[in-house]
Amino acid sequence: MLSLSHLHKTYSGPAQRAILQDVSLELVPGDFIAIVGDSGCGKSTLLNLIAGLDLPDSGSVRLQNREITALDDNTRTRIRRRDIGFVFQAFLLLPYLTVLDNAALTLKLNGITHREAQHKAQAALSAVGLSELIHRFPGTLSGGESQRVAVARALAHEPKLVLADEPTGNLDTESADVVLQLLRDRVKAQRSIGILVTHSSDAAATADRIYRLHRGTLHAA
Ligand SMILES: Nc1ncnc2c1ncn2[C@@H]1O[C@H](COP(=O)(O)OP(=O)(O)O)[C@@H](O)[C@H]1O
Ligand SMILES: [Mg+2]
Image (cartoon, rainbow, N blue to C red; front, side, top):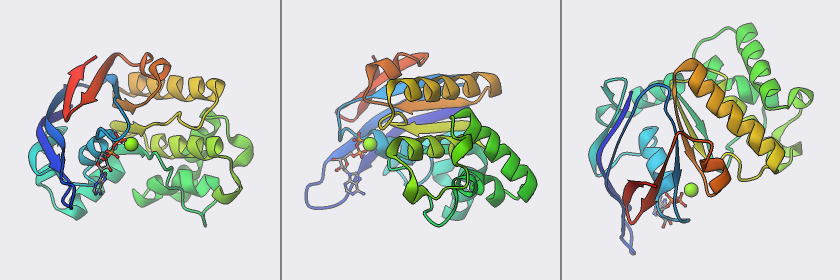
């Protein structure tokens, strides 16, 4: 289960502004929720805190009874690799690895054998409709194709928590439907937890519940 408790976050700098002010949320296995909100309201900031990529000023993130926010950098990285799948808004594919190796990367970092990692990565790529492109390099892909590789990479290691930051922002309606259905199906089948950040009300409507992030706080929408 995932528990966010009284998260506060302000970025330091000249125009200091509290981005998150008292965000709390409890999710249980099988939950697939959407977070919506205006551009710049702090959605990506919140996902970064949940993934332990950044730390809050105060408050805590607990995943499966481990307080992520109390762990050191290395331990957070290890937990992220094993238990979290993150679809980054900017994809963050590695340019010098093929599509297949990008999708297999987390599995390999987790110590899975080369063969099994390739097998699982191939299955994830096939699920997003990219079987034909596995030997290409990211530089040769369209935005939509890159986004689907990012989704495959986030799902290939069957994480307990999937964080998807605008995962359909570059997709046409048909591919968006495939990706949203896949995210939802995986969460339900594996009893993981899925958090979908999106601008699209159609995308948000595929979630069990919708929350709105507004002026630093999260409300049921
Ligand atoms: N590392 C950072 N340093 C300073 N300000 C930041 C940083 N990251 C994001 N911000 C600011 O925090 C606000 C929220 O950003 P973000 O979480 O990316 O919003 P969203 O994902 O909802 O569009 C924005 O005003 C953004 O400019
Ligand atoms: Mg964002």
